[in-house]
Length: 378
Image (cartoon, rainbow, N blue to C red; front, side, top):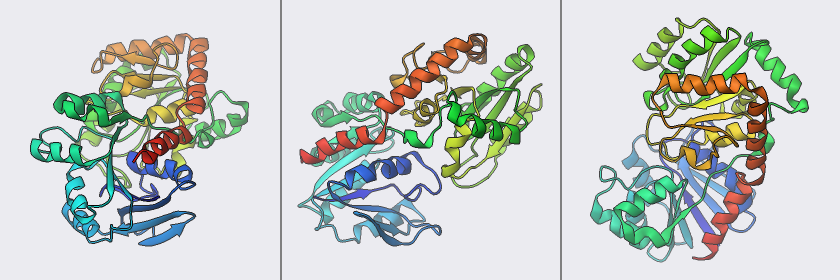
């Protein structure tokens, strides 16, 4: 079957500048392309050619300084050759693309709450749901949100949890990873530290300010702890704003080491997970289900995450992580961090269980196989 996969206008594929959707597409392509002829439509990038073929996958990269420009360039493509058009995270694009390809099946992959009234009006939402063959979502939280607004969508909704390439992530408890872990920690002067790790955009809704507040208590009681924040304000570049400057000011009050890595190329991210001892996700918003959880699991790290949106769906509290219901309470977060610092055997057990889950369940092959089943039903 000839399938077109329509990425959003935000970032290019492969994920040379990062992006959860871009990483998702890149992860599943090797498995999908064994069974189908795939064309990926994405954003132009100076780092990538406008068109290329890699194996059984074609890439077509379009200009898109704005969302409307990108959509117009999409509409100008030839769509009648595709039996299925799989649209990522843009329900508003389903109807315009349907007009260009009335004979093609269309499906939708949701990675955010894109059916909220401020995202799409009810009239077009209903038409979109009626038009698509199926809708996949990255979490039950996203699926339930669509169903609550549009009950008629229930039979078309399928939760397909994301995945990770476990070959890229070396478990922190692995002897094979010991030298690499030591070298990276030494680079930042963290040889003797217990490293609390944050990976993500430095934005208010991601909550690093809550973590920094919690670290005041931690560093007072545990002088050998350090905080590493991996990421920047936005994907692909090191930019600052008043919030990131505020974070820098907050950390000046901390007694221990604090590392801001800034933006790192996506290919470098896996080894930075190996530098940590405890991974913390402090999302303050209704997070669909942050992919950093899969990455931290693959690295064999004990996870502390806030119970926001879909984050807690893949965490069995006490088994492969800890869930924080008091999502905006630095004191409650500090208690969880102290618990793992005081109970190293439990932290190790949680990390090993997390790695095992990533290997057995949260891998790209499983994601692709679930999608293939849906593709074959069209």
